[in-house]
Image (cartoon, rainbow, N blue to C red):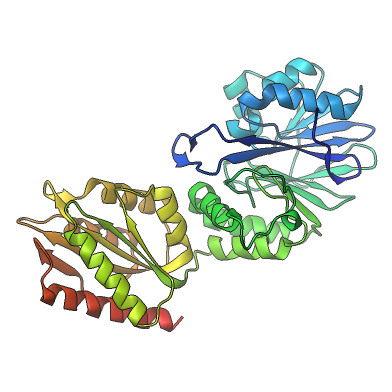
Length: 399
Ligand code: FEO
């Protein structure tokens, strides 16, 4: 039986909770799962907007058939070809062989490449409309939010923006589907929305800014993304969050990440954290790079302005889990952070040197003097940690 959750009359949410997948894109942890949202409009003509991951194909086909009550499915709108949304296309086409697949010029090669589908394809251009009867769909491309072919679909009569990845979230929908059905302040969604943004779309901040500018001219009463919560009461909030995150603005707070084999670099991290708090900084996060997946660390680094990185040396270089994190951060091209550097070396070093090399490439503002302890930190090293924390706190308090 399909859940009959309506966005408006004859517009349905078809969402599927995935609690079995451990890693999204086979790399990002899904401790709280993920939802794939598809949407159905049943009018004189009918349209399905995006599908779901392949394992949910059977349920999606069943739900569509039930909600259409004997009508055929005329259109499949493909906002994005990543297989978390396109994975059920072949099953939909099998169930409705005459269906017209609607996408833009960049969609079609991916449709053929992933699924070998070349027929019954309709290309839409920027701003073009498609009438279903009482409902009209309008299409806007949003390149690199998240892939080159990404687009959003705007339903003009009810002002619904089917935004695909944009404004989406990790985390399953646990009963509540709309933002006003969930206590966002006490739920996990705020963290999971930013983690989704930073991990999946974060690299493309400039393109997100262009998309926000493009969409600023249309009236939006509902944002229906393809992952997570549907926005209807807090639309300005989520748009404001996207604006802040895509501009890579950091809040008053610090993320300390360390790589430590025997606890010496970790000890320095703890002292720096305490010294920051003593200087008036309330938001301080400390992470062991070997224990916490970079997904979560990146999420906090996206939030806070100060990043303080420390590593022991390992085989003449940096501790490998820290190398992984630094590589991720370079990949995203995150800008505008204050950077503090610390670590330890027992003989030739390598950890602090590698963080300095990273600093040159990423061009963040280095704050304070770096601290590199010999083997275990001495009181003099910990006093240098205090100085580093003090300078970082002063910079943060100026925000
Ligand atoms: Fe949710 Fe880029 O796919």
